[in-house]
Amino acid sequence: MTTCRILPFAHLSDQEILLSPPISTDLDLTFIDGNQLKELIDLMFACLRINHHERPTFHDIHRFLYQQQQQKQSN
Image 1 (cartoon, rainbow, N blue to C red):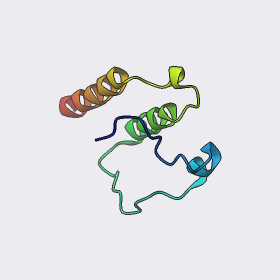
Image 2 (image 1 turned 180 degrees about the vertical axis):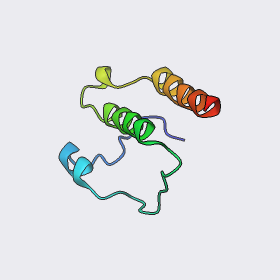
Image 3 (image 1 turned 60 degrees about the vertical axis):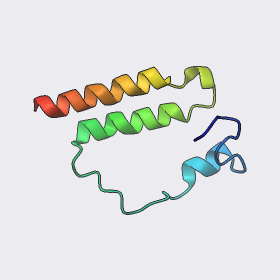
Image 4 (image 1 turned 90 degrees about the vertical axis):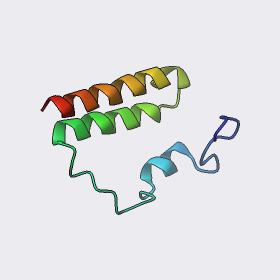
């Protein structure tokens, strides 16, 4: 469990994190349609904002994922 006392990848600059290769290359996102994938990527980039006040809260992320799940179930 993380208690937010240590920043993950603190030894890397923001630019190095954004330019680094993915940790796993076997991630299969084919079950997500193009629009949902764009929204998910936008959310992930929002989480990387330098100013922590501009990042989504846990509630924002939970609501986003819940809405995505509801959309998937209604289709």
